[in-house]
Image (tube, rainbow, N blue to C red; front, side, top):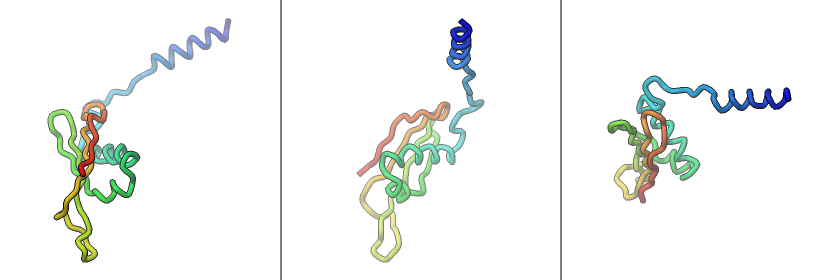
Length: 107
């Protein structure tokens, strides 16, 4: 009986535990939005691909962050240029709870 009561108390504490709610938002600024975006993009598109699209920029539109990479490619002279054809990763992130609303990659 004691085990049953202890189990019920444990479940009540576990299931009814405190939830953390951010004061303003879980993604309060552009820097945080970029870090979240890179964290979700890397496992999908690969570390090398995502690192090649840095720097990422983030703009707040209403209650969501729009994060996108920067297109660059070799210029044939050992440097990189943004004058090239291709696509970059993009992520929409909910400002209030950090949900990933969409994730894309252009071609």
